[in-house]
Image (cartoon, rainbow, N blue to C red; front, side, top):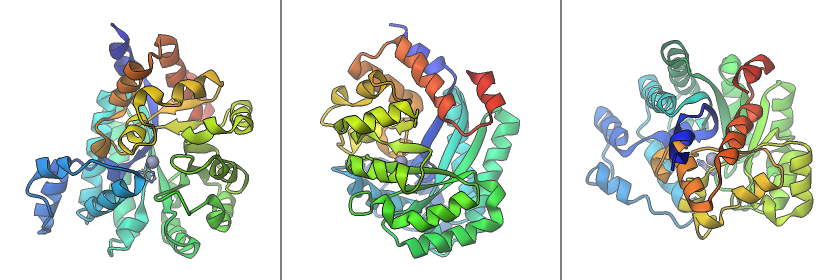
Amino acid sequence: DRLPALLAAMPKAELHMHIEGSLEPEMAFALAARHGIALPYADSAALRRAYAFGDLQSFLDLYYQGAAVLRTEQDFYELARAYLARAATENVVHAEIFFDPQTHTARGVPMATVIRGLARAGDEARRERGISSALILCFLRHLSEREAFETLEQALPFRDAFIGVGLDSSERGHPPEKFARVFARCRELDLHIVAHAGEEGPPAYIWAALDVLKAERIDHGVQAVHDAALMQRLARERVPLTVCPLSNQKLQVFPDLARHSLPQLLAGGLCATVNSDDPAYFGGYVNANFQALFAATGLDAQAAWQLAANSFEASFVDASAKQRWL
Ligand code: ADE
Ligand code: ZN
């Protein structure tokens, strides 16, 4: 079977990964040692064994705890450098990378430290590995809109270092409407708009992400299959969905990867893509996501080609770069 090799070899863009979610247990322990922080696990193997999640919140609790070892610009640089090196080996030619500044600024880490470290890794990887990348700042939806506005204010001195904003963290109980005004302000600033919606939350959150936030892409969106009118709209408007199969499996969004909705999304004519979300926590980088999904669902080489083409169509690169890749 040559499908796994095709999936690995095909050029692709990765559009949904949280850089804090690429913190491998080994790096967590190295950074903890660097800063004299004690982690509540014996070693990296014990930490990895703790990665057994019942739902999104049980993951987020560990993810925010892990991020606490990130302190200096060098830490953020090394984190992003490691992800980009790995992505390049998986034939990712372009990556749009989420970061969660509020989980760092809440610990007293300056916005400048976070953005400068991440941006330096992106510049270096472009020069040394030929992989292009861009940053997307995510607001934490379990916090207030006021705190999102404060975060945007802190980031504006670095406006040129990120291309857009997103919305992530605990979905249920925190609908897009909560952030209507801050996203309106972001649109005035010509930032690209994306939002996590329909991961665990209902199709209504996808409608609101589109109509209230004016999201250009939906992150996850896998619950759209429960709303026929929404499916038709997403297909008609070619609104991309950045789907993360291993994440959905590990967070028990689907009982089994074989029951994942991605084949239905493709069959419905939607611009679905495959991504890793938080690769250090969910058991694999982007190619492992492709391979597990294809093995479980029986998707074929035609679907592989479609998903790679969708990833470039859905990216925020300019039209000439898209032409080159498509
Ligand atoms: N932050 C990191 N990964 C996330 C996910 N899958 N959903 C919501 N917030 C996140
Ligand atoms: Zn995500």
